[in-house]
Length: 373
Length: 97
Image 1 (cartoon, one colour):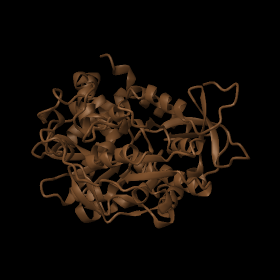
Image 2 (cartoon, chains in turn yellow, blue):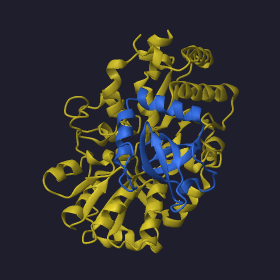
Image 3 (cartoon, chains in turn yellow, red):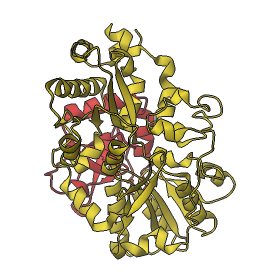
Image 4 (cartoon, helix red, strand yellow):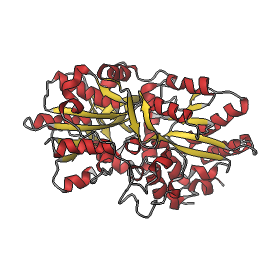
């Protein structure tokens, strides 16, 4: 098989897959959520669903920043550039996210000043180089990227750069998981915990899931073997009647997280009372707002934003896919009106989005399955 | 954005303690190392980089594994584009670019 050589330890993968098959009780249907979009990407890329027994279903979680961002926020950011005269800067993932009147990239083509950056520090540098212009950084991401935005704001303050601000769309993963656990139509048996988010927050914040909801959580690496091992660890817990937080990715994720990053986050950000997520609705204390001490660098306070709630195009079923109610290909627009080249919904934009990952790799289905057969 | 890029620290300039020079597949760029202020760092160490910031110190084997993973996911070109795209650091003459 074409991809067989790419996998580390195919023998070990086969062993883990056998053990999973042995442990999965035939009369039971398992629903396991991988929280992180990076895992979703890897699961599709490696066709992992195909080597699991049919009664283990992987549900794709909310851990794709551009996927959960409601369209109104993109509109707000674009308004700062269009009406406020600022230079809009953002990561590449944001550039193709649809707003009501087109994506940032389409606005750029129409003459709005929009620049892609690879780091928030590049946005700050742009502000230093253009003292007569305002530069806004449209910040997205979970705890993986929020510390970098926080450190950039610390630098802006230390260097007294007045023509720079951040539109914070940073969200936090724990309240989203809690909302999913509280959702009546969401019956899950366990969680594959995010890898890089956990390098910042550590493993302790997941303990309530095990303790209060009785669900296993295994923080996982991104290789096929990592993900399969994590699923096996979840099945072992379920078979033993345990629910614990385990760290499969201990080679990168410290149990306590990155204390410096957490300190920097606490210095610059506070929790918003509530924030809207695509598909999950309003979730209380689920997003980061810039603290008063940094108000001068907060786009929301320096510009008046439209702040209009915008619903997704009616035919797009991003919300249902995000909640795991529909698989990507079950959306009416999938692969027809909505493709990675011309995305209608945000889940088709980022490689971490379930729809883009599914679309990209569906033709490779079975690569791993064949490799380990 | 979710996937980190492994890089090797090649220089920790004394005059700019917040920053280090990393090398990723022959390309050298400056990254911020504030988030690793609790870690003893030296030239030759490997780190995982997100959006211009070193987030974790990892082993050489861990770095090789992450490099392979990026290639397997088809994200290696995008990762190099990101590293090459960092504008905030100096790029003295003679650096590979």
